[in-house]
Amino acid sequence: FDLEYLESDTKRPFAGSAVGYCAQSLKEYYSPCTAQSPFPPHRVLAAHGFDSTLATPIIVNGNKFAGCILTPKAGMDAFKKPDRVLIQDIAALLAANIYSKRLRKQTEESHKMTREMLHSFIPPKVLGKIEGYWDSKMKKAVENLENMPSEVERSTSWYVANADWSEANAEKAEKESRNKRNEIQGKINLIRNMEGNQDDVGVLVHGEEWVDALSPTSRALYAESVKSVCIIFTDIVGFSRICLDLEPIGVMNMLQDLFGRFDSLCDVHNVMKLETIGDAYICATNLFEDDACYKNARNAAIRALAMAKDMILVTRNAQIPYKNVPPIGSYETLQIRVGIHVGDITCGVLGQRLPKFTTFGTSVNMAARMEQTSQASMIRVSKDFHDLVGDAETGWMEKSSVSVKNM
Image (cartoon, rainbow, N blue to C red; front, side, top):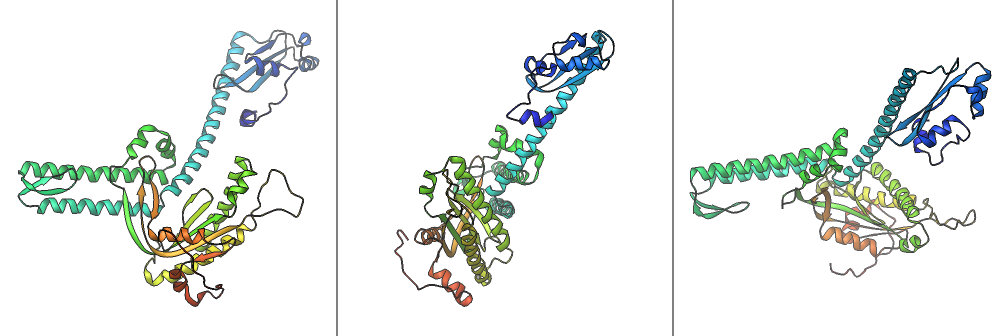
């Protein structure tokens, strides 16, 4: 029966058989005379010359019935105690094998899920930037230490003039700076292991001491300003109303289907997915790209616009899974609003437990405002984005001005 039996909600019916007895009692059943057994299958075996039958349960994890070894034998009372002990040992070995297979399957599923989650937390390209950021910071600190004047005072992080430093204090400060650099490098290595090491992923996520080891200092692991990034914001029209008519699992399945379509489009248009917040999907172009400089910002803007158009198209194929199924041909599909802006952003990695890549700044807020003031199945862009795309797009509607709060 193996894993299929263990994971099935409805167990196979074994009533009226020795296997059923083993499944219920988790004990072996020995019939020294099958002709007199209360179970019809045993009497059938007796008619074929098998006078004794032994049913030995396969028990997983001490209390889970996973199957049974049914052993018929010619001769009355043919199974002696050593025979029964041997078969019990075989059943125990089979149980251990089944249990290890189940654990292996669960571990593989956990690793796969964890890798997907961690990939969304910190994009691979950011890991190299974290390392470079801290490496340059630490080198600068060491240079400052070597060149500092004779009268200085060391604060909790950097160095301020005012005190008399001895040679011993200077060596101590240099050692602490080196330890700090090694500590940050250790954190970076742990994050890299999260991304690539399948054996360590489950430990890193589920082990408390490993999670604590990831906790950064009071400083962020990484921060950077990036110019001319095209930010795309989308959300579902009437999402709150739709959720009122759906079970929780229906809402999640609907979002999984839609966001899965968007993820595929990111690969098509070379767009970087940033995050999802509720029903909002946020992505960007010209962020950590090999040719990410202003002269290529127009190409990035054109790709962002093509991405937004395709997002609207694929959303029209995503049906709303209402509990009360409508008549055939009258299914309602989802609609989204889209907003795009181009500008400078600040990005970095934040978090104590599971560090997460995040973006913020005026440009991100402007993209969000463009989406909030957009209409169903429409794309609203800022003037900066419109001017950057230029004549590469000819399908613009009439220009309109909107009031944007707190901008």
